[in-house]
Length: 129
Ligand code: HEM
Image 1 (cartoon, rainbow, N blue to C red):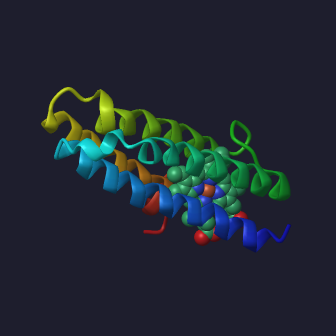
Image 2: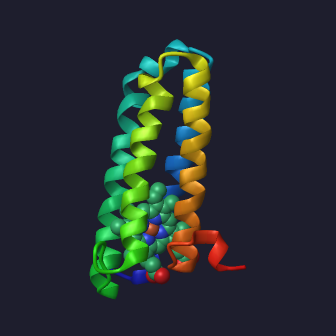
């Protein structure tokens, strides 16, 4: 499959992921019952699965992998952190303050990943300066 197309689909999943995450974190902080909706619960898993499938295709094409190439190790570890902090924001955080802070941290982690993706550098956006 065309590399540019797969890269754009990977990027599309990433932007869908953060848009949907922000939506769900608003529902979480405002304690909306809509958060229990089945579709709202499973959609993030579908998005993340496709994000990773496309990432796999990209890695095999450019022959660069986590634990071999530092920027991809950083992306993978940060993605895991984004998912874990995200679950605190959406369901595990006991108070609204904890859920709000977890939401902000998850968005910051996402911004870090974006910088790593653009620069291919663990220093993320700081590598541009
Ligand atoms: C939330 C998580 C992620 C976000 C926001 C994200 C974002 C992006 C973006 C924006 C690009 C395009 C960069 C550009 O050329 O402008 C990209 C490319 C890429 N991503 Fe991700 N990504 C994420 C997770 C991952 C993971 C977990 C991996 C693999 C471990 C990965 C592997 C790649 C690869 C191999 C490319 C192609 C790089 C290139 O052609 O220069 N991504 N990603």
